[in-house]
Length: 210
Image (tube, rainbow, N blue to C red; front, side):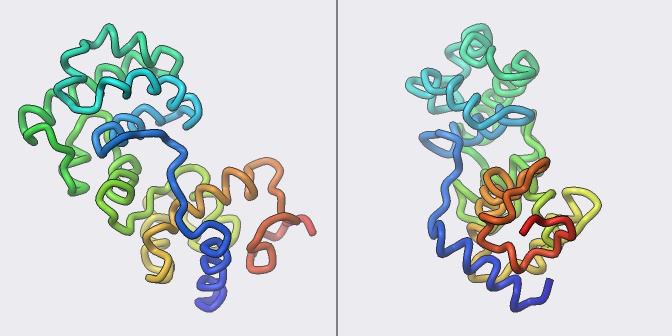
């Protein structure tokens, strides 16, 4: 995709949704971190349903420790892999209290040192909570980047690096949100809705429908 087309690509997405927000519901940086950790291999809607009551009274690592792992599991038992995720969330809370004064750290390296936090999760937290122009490559972004020709790559890390190089600075802060939404609601895996796509004419997908 040409540089001018990339700019137009994001200009259109910006025009449709100037301030995109995460579909995950949270109250602060800590609950965001927990929600994103729980969302691995789960839907945002499913996570929101499970955490709604939890986040009404758990909004700090210490409060998570106080409720204990059994009560945490009871809240998130509808989420896939909830047993392992509960262990990670509880271990994470203990580390945050003991090593980070109960605060969510603001660097990728520190975030990735926490149990259950991979690069994608760290990038989401850095972008939303710390306003850093990161690219959190999930399955939607990976598909859109390759299918459209925006930032092809053989794996998520390669796509992330490609996006960091080609996304115009004007749109870097919200780019990953726009790409997620495009992949989730238009550029779907099985049946992309090309006719209703705002960047249809800029896309390099050879099998796109008119």
